[in-house]
View: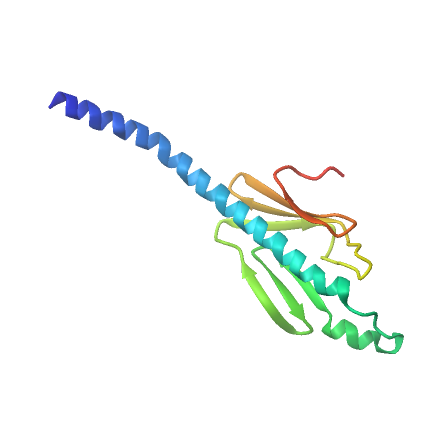
Amino acid sequence: MIGLLVSVFFVSVVAAGAVPRLVGMERTMRLDREAARLAAELMRYREPIMTRQPIHQDFVGVASEVEPKFELLPDSYRIREGMKAQAVYKLPSGMQMSWSGGEVQFRMTGNAQPMTIYLKAGKEMRYVIIDRVGRVRVSLTPPED
């Protein structure tokens, strides 16, 4: 009987230490998944912009109304064409997003407006980095300026 009580106590102590670690691992995996999804959506957004034909100078205003835009918000991001949202992605609760470098801009030449998007869940951070040549990557460390 005493052996059973000692065994139950030992298992309880081990479980008490493992549960917080499992919760932290789940948060980290969720953050990694959201960062990878954001990077994939940015790459999907980039492709049609880099392959579209130049707009004739007389129709620049029309093009700006229908040109897709990638909009970042603190709790979500979306792709818009004109006034219509094509896709909206909400971040899971407890996760926040911020960014530096202005708005997301890819050019037909392949270049991009460099920027960093910061995803944060608890104390964990992931960085989605867009460099000058239009590459998109996810990093565990902040970019070097």
